[in-house]
Length: 357
Image (cartoon, rainbow, N blue to C red):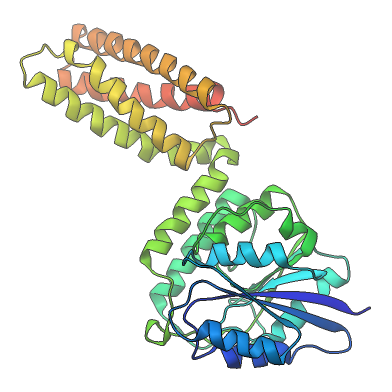
């Protein structure tokens, strides 16, 4: 059976490599594999768009789409996926880091009906691998490990470009990330749907930033955010608790600063507790909905959060007062009260305010 493969190529300022990339891509077509190549120009500032259109005029397999505003790799892929018509859809970068011949192997588990998604790993053999930056490698492994912890998948290369899908699978997914956050987001969505996933070794010819590599440090931080944002609310309670710890730490710091500032105005220690607690709870709410939980019903969630914040403030004052009466210093009373609030906050948020269901 001849399979139709749609290859989506996001392109931004790739005039130096685009023609050679397309030559390699078109070369993989054979009697068993037909191609649809969708180039999505993301408002390039060089000749990439003109070059893509010239190539499309010479090759019927190539289609060119354009963004009027630069939006990022994820947005370009979203556009390409929407227009794909093949049986299988694959991602191909416009540079020369990946060998399109590997795609012929990656589509086989889908052709055989064994997989719905196939990922190419740069850290599994076979294939040649140009040695690249140690710190880039370590960052990749860290992000892959973090993603695996939250998705419960055992992948070796979450950040790989080569991701191959049955068309129905990828077109059913709502992709939100516009830049390189696409990689952890799509892995999270794959894991959530419990799809049949294969991972296969591919070759990799790494390029440097001098050669035009675009991913940077801020994309690494965005990847961490995406891993937590798209997976945190589904994670087991112990893992959610670990994520909540830095959120609580921000809460505790803001609360302590607020109590100190109000205390400097002459208010008694107990009188200065309520307002900082409630203001710190606002930051807690913001961090929770961005990194850990889903607020499926915002109005109800905010109302519940406000109620539990008020109750927590009362609890905080009562515990601090009781510990002061028991002879503890104010500083130690605050430490003990805030540790108790850690568990109170986590339990109420997970159980009542942002229930997983």
